Image (cartoon, rainbow, N blue to C red; front, side):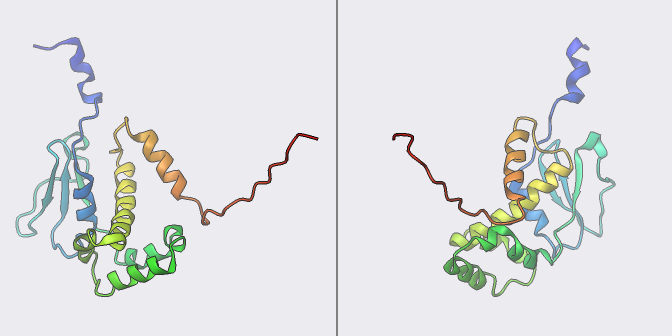
Amino acid sequence: MKTQLDHYTDLLYDHKFDVDDVIYALCGDTHQGRWLLHTRKGDLIQEDPANPLDVTNGDDNNHWHEIIPLPKTFLEEMFELPNYTRLTDAEKAALTDTMANVENLADLPPLFETGFAGGWLRERVKDASLKWLDARGLIPPSMTHVYRKHATSKSQGSPNRATKIILESLDN
């Protein structure tokens, strides 16, 4: 039985996903098939190249999304960001040590739990994940204002610099 509310069903935000799945797929450069995110069910699928699914981006009312892993250049580009330039020498050394044996993006997720350096790496991939989600209209409307503020604060071209403020007394 149809109701007056049925007209609005397609307009409701009904995408389910875990940002960690998107992070994992963006690092999945050693997988041979496609990475597919089905946001109606919240499933991340590692497609078997020998048995491909008959879906493309946007199928099922924009609930199927192909995730293409980040390019290998992302491993170097992370170290050109203002987030890196603001780090202390000790933090940069920890990142250098952590990245010593990283050859593929798929090597990153196991490092995410390894102290400061692992957390920093995860946050850089998470930033890329949020951009990917935003480009596909998958940032929930209730979180759009939070994401936009977060993205804008990170897009500044130069590191934050302290500003010297001089307060003068109005008393004579």
